[in-house]
Length: 102
Length: 159
Image 1 (cartoon, rainbow over the protein chains, first blue to last red):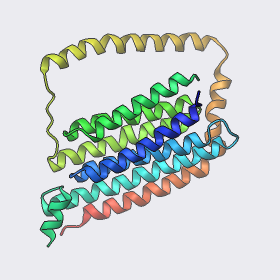
Image 2: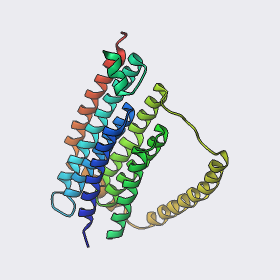
Image 3: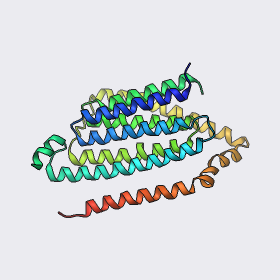
Image 4: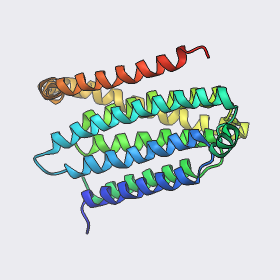
């Protein structure tokens, strides 16, 4: 029977691929930010599960904390940019924005 | 912790993320992402990472969700359809006793644990934050301050 660590690493890989797939699939910039958040979830879970049951648990938890705050900060900046883009172009569809730029 | 608990939490996390990513409504995606943040925080807290779990819930389920809702409402992408009023009423009727029972049980646990000498354990539980994590907190404050500067700069431009 696989251990908890293996289960969480597999879950993290699934989360990263789901986030990437949704990022490619979505036609809305807010959904793209949400996909980025899911990828950050996967990265955090990988970092956390890599330190489970070892003497380096505090180290991995420190990296998780750092990743949480960097991810949240990046998302805050991305959301601010989205508001600016919506003010300028009136849409959040990336293809429409590219068309309006030219 | 048993293997089944890890599997159950992982399945719940993946299910909520799939519902968030592939639903057409942005509001539903937000709600599901909120739940997935909660589940991931519970995973961290259950498997020994109390501080990352709490910080994860506070940051993603709290701050980032509020920011997403705000941007969603500002840009008008949200179609805030609550749905069936009867269903909402039924859910409220079901959830109020559950929350009441959980709170009662929680308060009972506090009253019984206060009689036991468990205060040194609780103190040592959070003591490591200040012993090992002071530099981490400083780095986090720096990252937040930098991002807030960028946001204030973006919003302060008139043109």
